[in-house]
Image (cartoon, rainbow, N blue to C red; front, side, top):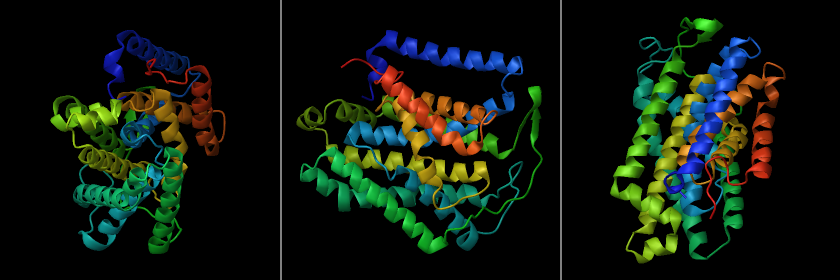
Length: 334
């Protein structure tokens, strides 16, 4: 599945044209003041965060063939581990350069990524691997991941409580852009880090031996195993990449909304799945495009409806995609 975008050029162009046409329509509507450009920009940054979570989610599905419901709670754990490190371990700091957060966040983020990666691999060894060896159906594994999600969320509430927290921060002036757009300086960090990670992942999947092994395993697990690929190692790499991206997405989400709470990852789960389905299941580049579309659609919708219904917009897009194009924008015929 990870090679879908290289298998069928016409379909890729069609999907790209759809995305570009949608962005063009939004731009025209913004120029005509039908849609607020500020909401479009907000949606792009939200989509960048969703993209990191959705890419990890689609990689896990592409290799392991089950919907990992606990992925959103990996995001929550990432956000709270950084909160713990900033508050109890690392030096207190705020206002690093143009950002509201301090330099300690740059130290805490890689440590958190490693911690969540270790958690994911331990969970796989303790739970998911045993279920795979017993040839349990993917539906049962997905339901097991729901139990893991509930356990992780409950553990967050036991350790940190159920209230709303925030990282140490120093208020900074927003950047003023044309067309009445104002963005916080932290969003520059969000966009830049997302771009770096997406480009690094692209290089990894297309240039490295392990990346090629992951693509081969995604296409046909048994054939990859017979060919001499260490599929268990591929699985661990999949969990590592997915968990690292999820941890980063959780931290960026906490920075984006200037708060964190125990159900933040759970609340973002429907938009993540919507992005994966819209971009075609198992296709990381499709997940990126799907996440940007979902983010923009959700934010623009707040011009007419209450923000509480943003997950409903993502759910509606997911349902329409399944009805109109079940394979997603970047999907190919088997």
